[in-house]
Amino acid sequence: MSLPGLELTQPTADRPFAAAPPTQISLSQGTEWRFEVAFGTTVRVKLLAGTAELFGTELAPSQTYTFSGTKAAIYTWHGCTLEVNAGDAVSSLDGFLPGEVNGSAARGLSAGGCQSEYTAEETPMVEYANVHFALEEMRQQAKAAGRDGPRVLILGPEDAGKTSLAKILTAYGVKSGRQPIVVNLDPSEGMLSVPGTLTATAFRNMIDIEQGWGSSPMSGPSPVPVKLPLVYFYPSQNPLEADGMIYRPIVSRLALSVMGRMAEDEDSRETGIIVDTPGILSQGKAGGLQMINHIITEFSISTILVIGSERLYSTMVKDYDNKPTSSASAVATDERISVVKLSKSGGCVDRDVGFMKAVRESQIRTYFFGNSVPSTASSALSLSATSTLVTLSPHATQLDFNSLAIYNYIPPTVDEDEDEYDPSQLGTGDPFFTGGGEGGGVDPSSHDPNQQPSHSDEPGSTEATASSSAPIDGLSVPLKKVPGPAPSLLANTLLAITHAPPNAPAPAIRDASIMGFLYVADVDGEKGKVRVLAPIGGRVPSRALVWGKKWPDEVVGLVG
Ligand SMILES: Nc1ncnc2c1ncn2[C@@H]1O[C@H](COP(=O)(O)OP(=O)(O)OP(=O)(O)O)[C@@H](O)[C@H]1O
Image (tube, rainbow, N blue to C red; front, side, top):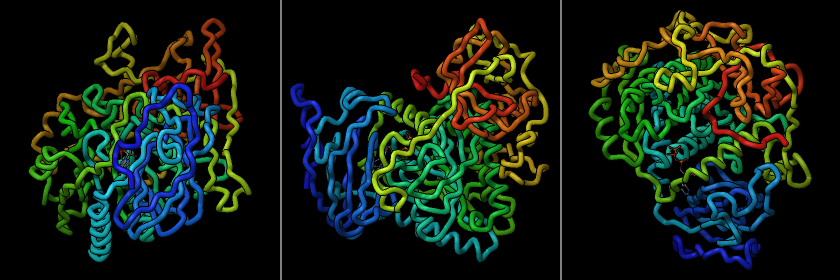
């Protein structure tokens, strides 16, 4: 057994990419093997004996899994033996050479070529499993009482393990035959989509061990069935930007869609939802608590899990514990919110700016080009005789800038000169215009169109009034059409294709779900042309496009 940190040898200049020999790692019951693999290198892991799981999803025996750009843990309930092996370097699609990210990538450092690895005996897995069993009990009780299943909110500071817990609860739920709806409210990392998106996905089957949530639904072969998320675009890293005036209504819209899905789908209704949040909301920043309150209200949260923050836990208990949920049936069924404190895993890694940038770039590349790391898992499922590299064929087209309806969010707080902020151009109108335009049918929010999301921010809300300084949703939507000539800043950014018609009112564009994304490869301002990359061929649909001007960050050189 290795001890934390002891195997972190210094990379040497003369032996930069020495391949490490295969290593066997024996784990006793209730322990986990934590490992980090840099971008640009791969590590192969095989379960030789026993049982093991990665964030709740079981590893198949004798199956080789390939990891790259990963920080994770393989846990065993009953003991297991793993074989760890350095895989090939990958540089083509990732765009990173081994050793590039963060200046400290894997150079044959630890067992099997991991950047770092060790075995840990203390883990919060029993606590997390108990949460799952408690949720199962709540699901049964809810069914008996005619209520919706638990709506779980996961809170905690950055890198506290919120997403990992969401994966564990989702995986255990799926294993118990459930179909949780997983909601990602963190725009800094995409879930089954690119960064900058808020998504909801019904998980009926297992999570991909190698890909995690995965960054996009693939049209190529995939070792696990493809999941289709409902996607909304929020082109900023910070949900609290402009007092949350842009983020808040998008959350409401997503919540409305999720509740609509719950109302229609019995499996999802019985299972409930799991909401993962951005760490910034839990870090005591101005407006954070109001936004949490908004999410709790909109998703009618019934269980709040707080990881790694005593202070936030205490605030949540004071404000919400044992208070009625905002669900319509809460009064009739006496449904109350419970607040639970959970330990942060010692394995949680602080991911620095460089690593997160690499994660995001990788998500965007995967969206357009497919996986850059050959999946050895696919071969086990007879998708191919050898490892598969799922490559997609994105399509580049040149478009007339004037034929496009591109909109940009310009929050009133930004420098008006820089962004030519013009309040007279702000859209006004019905804040809950159902959006979706002609293509609205794909939006599963077949809810009652008269149903308005609650903005009272009521349960336990002592701070609700503090949000009143923000504009009331819909009265001013800071979405402005980008005028010609084509701005050069469009290059290397993403355009979200909404389901709204090109000239829909601003609230409709904001509230429309996303069909897909275009990447702007280059801009010819003089000729008024933009060259874009689309995930599939064919004409770019005539819809309103929302510009990710500042977020997700630029991906230079995606197209050669
Ligand atoms: N037990 C563990 N062993 C090793 N790595 C872990 C473990 N738990 C979490 N990690 C890793 O630590 C990092 C942070 O965890 P995670 O993404 O779950 O945190 P988070 O709270 O969701 O972060 P953020 O708020 O930034 O989204 C991730 O790379 C995750 O894979």
